[in-house]
Image 1 (cartoon, one colour):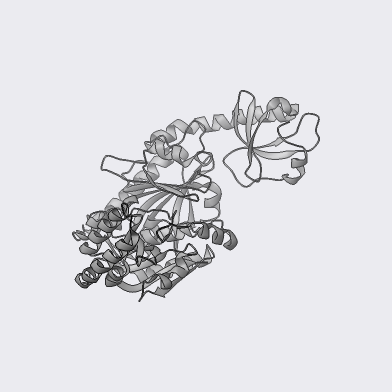
Image 2 (cartoon, rainbow, N blue to C red):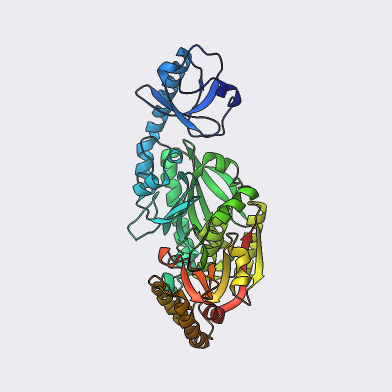
Length: 482
């Protein structure tokens, strides 16, 4: 037998809302019954999922005649419903989002991202993201997005998709990416032009989805911070398409699980005990004295002044609280960048406390010595650091990080960089290029700190001497703690 009858009593009952049909199993010559989701049927072998999420295969020959008949009839009906919309929906979206199974929630996020040609942005044991900053010819659902991001869960399956169209961050700025962000100021376009672009995008997307899925419903969804917004909602096979047009902010299309939309955007919280173990497990140590946090999600802010929203998204997701850089940016960011960090922090503090059970707080960073920052780093909590990302600071951070790869004598290295840092710190006393990034590690022997910027994988970790870091520090920061 594939399953024991003793399982039946424990897992009786209706499963949580799913895209897949529910069927009742009964073993041949058995009396107990089990409600399961029917995921697939091929060559008389059913792929099923129990209420605890466990999947298993069962040959139909092992089941009672009534169960075999129910599975075949249910699967035939289910496939008819899927095939009615599958091809037209993919065509309307302009991309093969849905495979023949018609349910991205049961697929590895890698496969979904591959069909959409989204490059990997970040992957950790608990979360992943695939992000594309598009070119002019790229369309999705009848309009031209600025960016698409697909998120994966701790099991490596698709969790949600976020597609952002006209918005104040992209549409009102042409600053560069990464370090180049500081080389020129954003050039604003007329805000009336932005309003017209947003209305056009929203109308085009609504028309595209309505043609395939019918008229939408309207509902309110929780956003980031203490905000909610109105969305148009289309449902298909356990997927909800949520279209938002937030005045003066952005047009966005989120594709989420139907039960998540039914809950108005509320998510399940990771327990404090589990999170403490997870965070502690992210801390790694090396023989040379390096102590740093690994597996922090990377978010590439792209060509926008979104360092604060991107960095907060990284910290929130690391602490088990879902977040989206673009939605965070609507809370406290002007067109093209320029975040009111204090206001953003207030909104993030509300979100992490009310929705994730975490504590966000400001901390003083007058000193960046290891004995001051290790209380957070050692338990896996990164520090969000306000600083000035000056050109000579970045040059030193890049060169120092490259040089560390070939160091053999770490004592000599420590003496060398201490002397360099004396001179460098005096040359980095200017202000400007205001920035927020993460302090994710330290080395007590070499007196260095490890820093991570929201500029892509090449900036996931860089090392600078404490004196150099303190020279560009604004002496303030934040943590999302437990």
